[in-house]
Length: 200
Image (cartoon, rainbow, N blue to C red; front, side):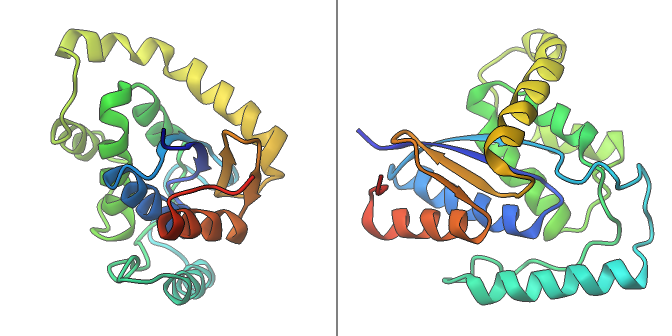
């Protein structure tokens, strides 16, 4: 059986975006079963930081260049500096309210919307359109009712991440109990893609 991974990441983090790309490859090739749990690693970001300031723009540009240097096979070729800094509280609830079948596709869609397409994912209409494009195993009524449990998931995932993540994203926890943080998490996902296994 493929190893199981829990990955904690934030939609506004380019390193988490790279982790999502690597997780998607593992999922597509059956090399691992991935449960992605979104967290808000920087709640100091305001609800509408648009346009991005020069200092923040330079910081993001530096991080994206680093991510590209870490990537292979074009993993981060499309990444670019977004127009706004993103407070991810609302988008995390959107993700958490999705059923398990929809989450993997929705995760990739949301990361691409922010880091590649530079869409305004603070806009409800944009989010509704993105969510509608991702297949779900639930009816519309069932999907709507899941919004009631989103807050529970977000609180639980955040508490878990604070316990193991030490303020860092991404974080990978394997079914063998291994915890990898930051660049180590990215390397672990890359290694698993090469070897089809996770070392304990």
